[in-house]
Length: 213
Image (tube, rainbow, N blue to C red; front, side, top):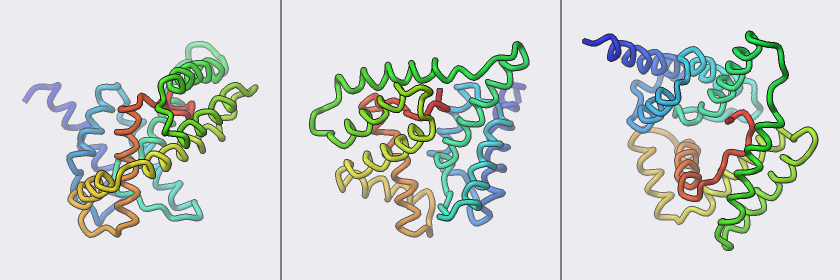
């Protein structure tokens, strides 16, 4: 067995263990989540950052008023990317003390939002409204980071509502196969996350929260 294969196997196994320790009722990582781990590996996300993000996701769930069920690694991605952004800022801070480049990130997201608004189909009025609100939050001084994070979540819900019923059912069926025994509401949370990713790729919709950049 090559050293590279051994390293990759360890990467996947440690991420799986970190997730499954929070969910003892789940015994394996489904193929969709393995694909997501592969994406993180290609992006070069450090193992410790991913584990930190997974732990944060479950900690936030316990602290929140609404006990959102976590059954998929895709539901951890938000906290993982937050942890990665903070990891990068710490590395920069070790080289030379400086403030996080919030303005630079906001400029980049604003550019992507404006580009998307130009090509967005007219019938997607709710998506347009959210992007217009994001534009205002990005142009504020300083950028309204909490508002952008809320709008990013709102956009995911809007994309789920736009999804034709047959596609919703297909997504739910796939989630049911990956996570047998879950309730319809739990499956919908997983399905919504997956559908939103597909919509974003199709329409080239940017992430609105700055920690993604």
